[in-house]
Image 1 (cartoon, rainbow, N blue to C red):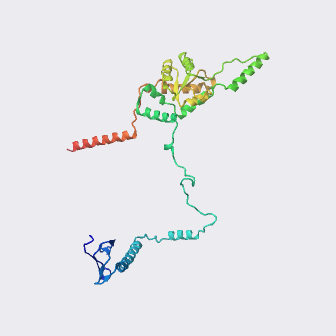
Image 2 (cartoon, rainbow, N blue to C red):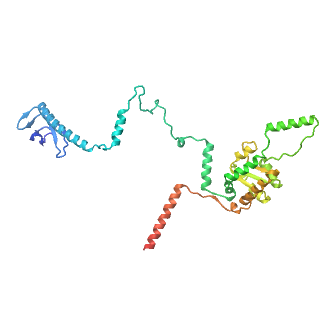
Image 3 (cartoon, helix red, strand yellow):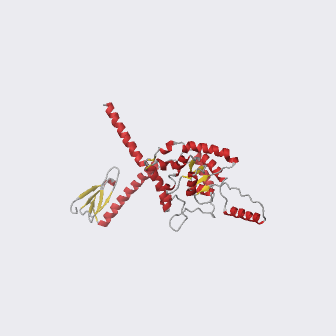
Length: 340
């Protein structure tokens, strides 16, 4: 490459540059042509010999001419490409408004910097990155698992709870029969003691209250003393109460499932309650109780579909898409067969 004689022709001033030594090159990009400029120790320009320094000056001058021409072309291109502002009155109004605004030197607007140790970070939804407690994870996993697997009818019937209107009626009636608190009991006992001390007659009437506790409710149902049984749908493990609906059916005691065990617990001043039973009803509430008992018998005691319908079996969204794709493929094959 060093011994090879190269001739570079340029269109600037119709000059020709000849070089014997190929040491330095600079690329020229022109829309019309593409050539190479080379500089060396000895060059011949128009049958004249120059030193390397003089040759470099000559090449630099030529390259400057090229750059000036290129710059002019680029400016023309940019001026054509730049989008022109729409000639409308709205744009003029906006420009006037911006010009009219006077910047207050006391309140300088600085761009926020959200890097470490700077401005307070904006609020983001980080629920996917939260390390949730184990009981929450288990609750969510159990919910999905019960949707996927086939659930027996005896367990699936617990998901058939009362709706909002019915549950409000049942809870409103049961609240009237909630047992007394510790302070109320203390006041009642002190009053009785004072009456005994003064040799007065005491009212020894039986108090009509709700009965709670699984064993206690079971004995009441077996002896047919319970008139209404309300069972929580979220008892864990479910085996504790899974047999209670069938016992109520056999003893012909109206029952229902309700959300949730904490609501039943508030009725009896406890944290939670698996089930609650009503044994006696006052005369003023008898008509309301009869209507409720009739409705609950139709929905639960006499409803045989509860023991036939199997729960679960709901596939996930990915499996659903796969099944739909397979179904479409089968339909296309059948269409092809029929068309042939």
